[in-house]
Image (cartoon, rainbow, N blue to C red; front, side, top):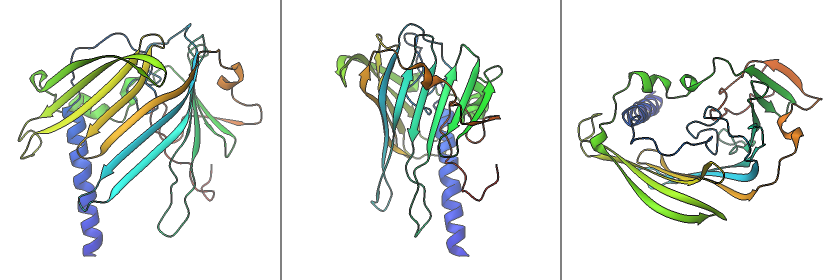
Length: 274
C-alpha cells in the first residue's frame, strides 16, 4: 500500500509541477515573422496556423526527448515519421511512436497518420493497423482544443521581464537555410513554490523558404530536452493520394483519442471494442 501511495504522490507532484511550468510560461516575447505549421503534432500551432499554399515539400521527421531521473537513470524516447505539404496547403503527418509495453511484455509501436485538408475543411486521423479513418470538420476546432487550453485561460502569466530572446543568426540546418532564435523563460523563486529560479530554454530554427521551423530544441528541467527536426527535405509536389483516405478504410466520425493536432495516444488493445 505504501509503495502504491508513493507512486501516486510522485505522479501527482510531477503533474502539478508540469502544469505550473506550462501555465507560467504561456506568455512569451513579441511574435516573430508569420509562421506556418509546426513540425510535429506537439509543436504549437500544428494544423491550426495559417494555411501555407504554393510551398510544397516533404521530409522525414524525428522527435527525441532525453531526460535524467533523480537516481541518474537516463530515458531516451524517439518518435520518427514523415511530413508532407502540397501546393494547396494540405498537410500529412505520419508517425511511428515509441513502443508501448507493460513490465515483462514486448512493446508495439503505434502507427498513426494525421491529414489536415483546408480545401475540404476536414481533419482526419488514420489508423493503418485497423484501416480506420476518423474524420471531423475543421469548423469549431481551433487553438482552444490544445492540451494547455485551461492553463492558457486561467494559469498565471509569465512576466515579460522574465523572458529574454536572442538571435542566433543564419545557419544551414539539415541542408536548409534557417534563422535561429533562442528564448529563455525564467520562473522566479516562489512563483510556483520553487526555492530556486527555473529556466526553460527554447531554440527555434525557422526557414523562410519553407515557411516552417526545421528544428526546435526545448529544454525543460522537469521533462528533459526535446529536439524536433526535419531531415531529407524534398521540394517536389507530394502525391495527391497522400492526402486522401484510402478506399479500403472504414470512415468514422470524430477524432477518437488524442484529438487532432495533438500527440496521439497509442491505439487501444485489440480487445477494446470500436
